[in-house]
Image 1 (cartoon, rainbow, N blue to C red):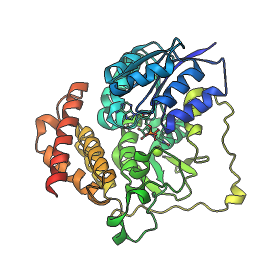
Image 2: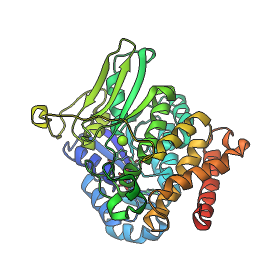
Image 3: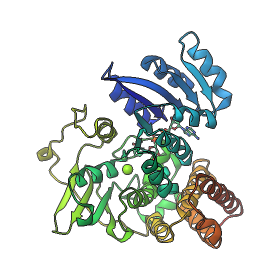
Image 4: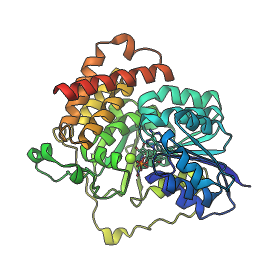
Length: 390
Ligand code: NAD
Ligand code: MG
């Protein structure tokens, strides 16, 4: 039986890895929608190769190019945020949520409302609106599957276990590009230096977030939301080899670790085939050759993002939406050369401080409108703080 599949963020790192897997199994999938950003040539090529029903670019200004590239194929072309949400309402069995940033939330919710299984790479959905995402899935009988490697690892370690027997959840972090740099050098880290990951090949934004550990900060919150574990049971462990992705500790003292190559096709393939396990084209680890796995505690001074995430988990409500929006703005400012690498955490902290005074905003009901309002206000605050200086 063919499965109807849509991929949001098809042209990105996770999107292309997803397509790599489904293209190996021709005839098994019926591709409904593919979406992308400015790279319409790639989007059109993917839509043609997979014979999708519709291709959508996020940018209205690229619609003419997309149409031209798809002329004569019978594949529909559309553009804009609303068109992406509409594409997410088209019936599909399995939907990959791999847009980067807060923009991934609304299409993911729309897909869940159709009852589709949502493979969630877009961690920002759970950071900004975890309770809303889970409630939407529940209300529509839709299933949510993790794609972030650590969360896929925790999910796998929990299979057949009772969540009440869980004592702790440990997510690992490579430590990013600067794990071995002297602390004083970090303030002067350049964009090129922050854009190289030692182990993973990923989109630019998450690669920089890995260097600053904002990625792990988002993942702490993602762990809390996805699995409903108390924040004080979630730990971060630096593991430079990126082969153990997460460990779950149980009341009897046992730790179940998930070990696998640093290849996102593993977590994507697990979500694609779940609940079955099928063969995947990933490297088989030769542990005798690898020899050693190292672990160490994260240095909080080097990674202030982690303490900020803890504060966000304590505060709850819409503080995750504030945190993520401020982080996205700070990241843009770093990419554009307007602030230094270590200033990103300072901006996020200042925005959290400022917004935490507005209790009615932070503790408003977690609806899409309120998440968007908190996101917008935090972006404005971040821009002001970035322009006027900390
Ligand atoms: P990427 O930058 O490579 O790709 C992002 C995709 O989203 C592209 O298709 C892009 O065109 C699209 N996009 C960007 N902005 C958009 C907008 N405003 N509206 C609509 N579409 C937009 O990113 P990625 O590395 O593939 O990451 C995607 C998501 O998966 C992120 O949330 C990231 O945190 C998460 N994730 C990625 C990896 C990885 O290995 N790359 C691992 C774990 C989790
Ligand atoms: Mg991850």
